[in-house]
Figure 1 (cartoon, each protein chain N blue to C red):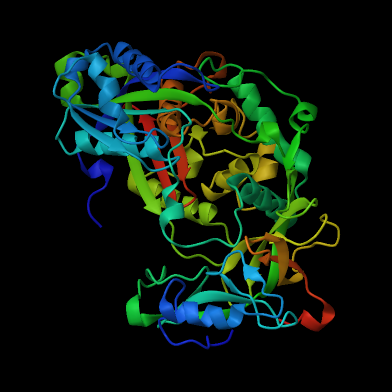
Figure 2 (cartoon, one colour; figure 1 turned 60 degrees about the vertical axis):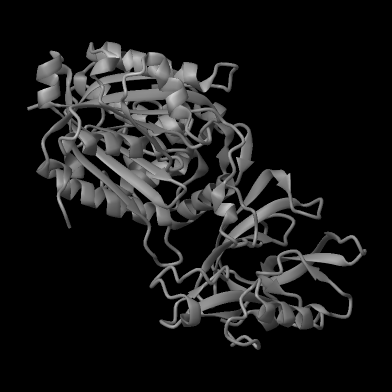
Length: 380
Length: 171
């Protein structure tokens, strides 16, 4: 085991920006991405020429979209890396930007995600291994939902309450793809697979998100308002191991990744005020609140039902609306989570502010076999 | 679980395997496997369906079969072999797709997650019309079901799972 993030020099999120997540439009990915980056630069009140490196996360755009986009901010000679890690592409970009600054290579780095659904091939189909059936992620999560109900005697209505909460949160998020509160009856309409309904599944869409990471030296040198900076104290990326066949890979992987992140950051789940999880399907939020240790295994429904994961509860889970309602445009998603946690820790989340938030966590899963957890806290 | 009747190295895509599949695939009705790297069309329709898997020298069994390397220990080459797996297991969960039909059928698509008797977990299509009668713990076996015809008019069969008959419900 080498060093952890806290063993290196401190790093901070100093700027955040997004392009609203939305249905696929005629806008180019470059327009989406530039909107987010310019907003982040404005938020940090720094110029593009101050940014020394950029990590661009996307999964759906094919080869090298970053340069063709970022050159429109000015050809500064910036170090540029493309990052692809499926749904966790953006989270992985954040991790690399943090490491770039923490190790002292750069004082200011950009992590961003941008995507539009396209026709990029799914390389797992090229490994030469055939599958017994072409079961989509939707059906896999329908199976997981039924398994959860069976294991813990949960009802479809109880699980659907995840979507009720998150659509309600997204109604106060101007960057969310869906911005309309929904009743339980509305959420239960339009079944798609098992007990999953349309509003319990994340939408397809496009968007962009950007965060600027800086060191103390960068903050001082550029005159950035340090009081609005948020420290990144944990960044862990893991892949799956072999688990018992009846156990969910994403749950066990999340449990391991979060445990390592808590250990490295020196905090525990009870300390968390805000959490963004990979809730692409409603049952995932329940599973992850348990795997993160916010509640005991099998207690996710009760934790939700008692309002403990609502804004104003013990820990606001998916205050942004989560993947279900804010959206999941792949590359931007993990970056957008870090932007939301930063906004909450700054106390700038407006109508969806979780009062007194001081410690937050962002969790993403990619292709069901990659997991990233970031932990952020208000500056000392 | 039975040893494969072809020599070590008889992995899908290799000459050994092709010869093995050629023998196994020439059944009375000349059925053609939709996924020949994953299951064998037995010579007699009454024979049990057989899946193909992989076992490493450390004893880890995996499905689908592959020779790229064991996902537990990384064994490859001569330390990994193709074996036959019984197409039988236990249903852990299931779900109906409300907007999709089962391939080759007018029936709704019902999928399940099963743990094969040989160990691996796999998501499968269930050969049922609805979820009535399904439950966690149900014994299931794989059947070869016609899903179309090839250019020569031979039936193409795929492997779907259904509740085991009493005579099949061991395990």
